[in-house]
Amino acid sequence: MPSRGLWGFARPVELRIDVDPAPAAGLGGELAAIHERIRTPGDRLHGIPRIATGDPDLVIRYREADGEFYVYVEDLRRCCLAGYTVFNRLIEVGRHADRYVRAPHSKYDTAYQRRGLATAVYRWGLDAGLCLMTGARQSVGAHALWQALARQYPLGYVDVRGKVVTYLGDAVAPEVLGDLHTRMLLLGRSWTMSRFAAATRMR
Image 1 (cartoon, helix red, strand yellow):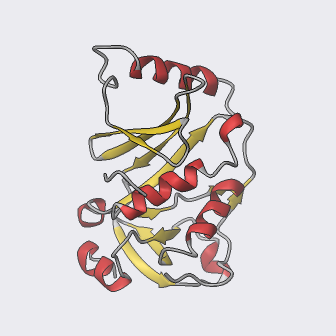
Image 2: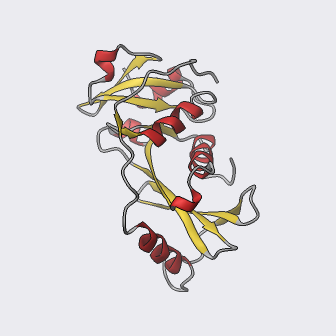
């Protein structure tokens, strides 16, 4: 992953939307535990790469494990973890697509939400050349984030079943949209749909 951070259609149709769940009761404890590991010599999270952001108080730390990317946002001034994003592998896709596609999932403390942190991390992954795919459902907040990114990165809809990815186009009918196999796909920097199809054997 690097150290930094097209067209889209005017009104992307909406994927299945779940109501945003209440923040997990244990999130604060989870973030505190991860931050403690980052600060503990000898722990595998200690000393992982750190890069600056546009905010002098915040830095990004990241690591890779089993093909998945973990990106942590640390608040240096408050000495805590603001949250993190994991770029997960998708068990639904075949080995060719697995090389290039990840599904991002984020958890950020309430105090750091609506500050564009997840958006910046997603852009960081996209600018690294990762292509991102949604899960079967999205929260309202995640959907808004994807719509915003679609104004800067190529976006399309795909059908995923039996380890096969099939391109559906840049818009789909409501009945197709309601299918749990329909996913949203964002292409990373330098990708085109034709190049992605060739590399992943997308139909």
